[in-house]
Length: 359
Image (cartoon, rainbow, N blue to C red; front, side):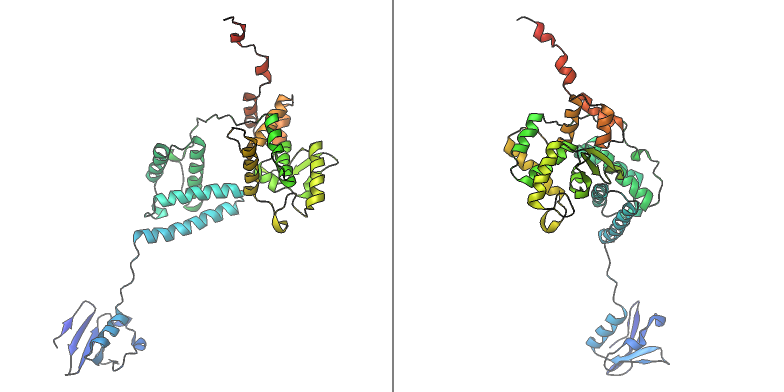
């Protein structure tokens, strides 16, 4: 056997049956780790002596020179993004953002990460933001409200997780706003939906949402103690913006809730599911859509439509806009003013010019 020299070791025959192997990176040698039969370390020669056996050599090489597994860029980035996502959610939680906001921001930042899955989050630039936003607008045709959520999520990630300033033009939220009027049900349509809800608990839930102008999260978070039958008030604890408020309790709802109490006997939550657990938002949505289908009302309505309808019906009944703002829990009057554009009180008083024509 002739001498064999590689970048890691030199293999030299010293007898018919044995050879020595000199490891160049001597300081990293695992002298005490070698447990190969017939192999020993010679201190004076600073080399190993072993039988001329291929299996013995393979074991020795595997012990000293196993190449580390190479991770591709995508694997490295995935690990980085997993950590960045955890830091992102931790920051939102520490700042006491609502569950809905955390859920919305998390969804957007995950989509953002997936788009740049081979780039380390620390290396993302303003140009990446521009590229991402353009493809959302051009290819997916996102709305302005959706664009606002995307920008807010990415901006929060850059500022709170990456600790970078976000003065770039691409982080600016568009000033122009979409002005979409909410879908509103008439009183007769609300009555029809409630009539198509035979289950007592389900009817009580939908009636509470409509008669108090509640958000979905607010109705499932109601506790028995939040119902004040004496003062005819409902207390909303920690509503949007973590603000408490009161709203009105209808006489008819008191009667309905008392009947519901006698039959279902809730313990803590006003509306409870199985094992006295808090009723889920998804279940409330399914109740509404089921009743809407049965009513054959052809409107793109949701559970939130009952809240819009409540506000509109109050305004049409002559209630002051500021009072409506207060019981709805709107921080800004402009939010409440949207209902002035869908009420038909003034429209009924207008004489249409076509009616004065004789043809």
